[in-house]
Image (cartoon, rainbow, N blue to C red; front, side, top):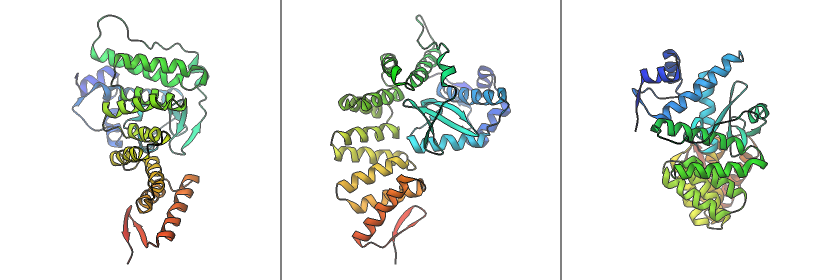
Length: 310
């Protein structure tokens, strides 16, 4: 695997060394002496966001970027939203294109992309060029293809093109976990659950630490009425990413449907702690109340841990 030192990163990306340090201080990236190509891709995204802010004479702080990234990790189970989706400036924070929509992770609502029309007019080169390529060039081409596929998912009419592009990525890189997940989600939405399950399982093998892959696998297994297997997948998702609110919600539902109310209670209360406002939180809170009443339990939450009162 090609590695780059700090001087290489500053030179290749035309970065100011102070900017790199500010992202490190804000906790967006970890301080390193050696960087991978994935690190360079993440830094390129950050650089482009800052450049756009400068062109439009607006400001987005490093802290706001970090908060948006962390919120997207919780909402979507992503390891690195800057690489697995396409970030878009939205006010003082970021939104992310995911599965054909623009998601605002702070409000957990779908957002309208005012730049979509202009962006669709631009021709995007998204194929791996023939002939010899360095690993870095090949990875850059694959990343460009992936981001273009994400954009194609924004409109129903171009979803088939997105699916074809994901297939092309997987022909070149069979273990490309984000492409496996996004293609699986296209099939999931078409209710072709067998195909979706196969792709999600491949994603869990390609990246065993990818919480979103296990969450999506749980969803499709649930649709296929394999509740025991779905429960195991949700368990894995929350083990990998304890702050993954939606995975706690679905795991609580799975436990309730299996009659395991006490296990469900823990995850209802965790969901309420992670996402305290909104209709889903209200439902989780009500389910927890019903369990406490029916089971005659006396349990309180103390810093996220459940303990028996008294």
